[in-house]
Image (cartoon, rainbow, N blue to C red; front, side, top):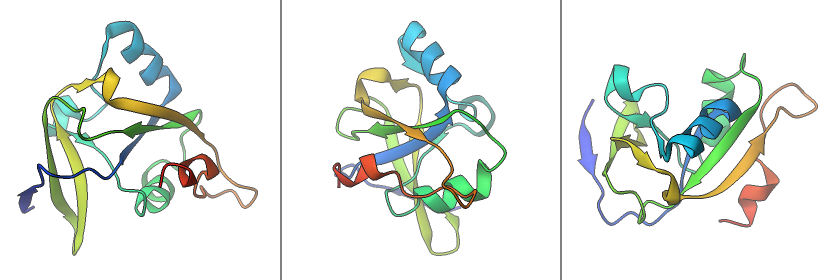
Length: 125
């Protein structure tokens, strides 16, 4: 996996999680996700990647939400790294300060059973 630091990124990044994890983070004042301890970072996506990621990795999950994260507010390093050939994904290397999350959006499956681009994200683009 090749690392590429993008310190000037201002594009919104997104993280899919279960509502219960976010509620716990709000109580704790910090978000750690479910991969920080095992992989060393919190997986995120761009707007263009979110639906594909949801359908590939979260198909069996319920009560999902999307955390809309302003990278300018994140207090730890964000790296864009190649997780799939030719595809760079944002990874947050450390605990996510919850004040970097500017919006939380419900993320449910569409009528066809697959995740679709949440209409609430359109206003953020």
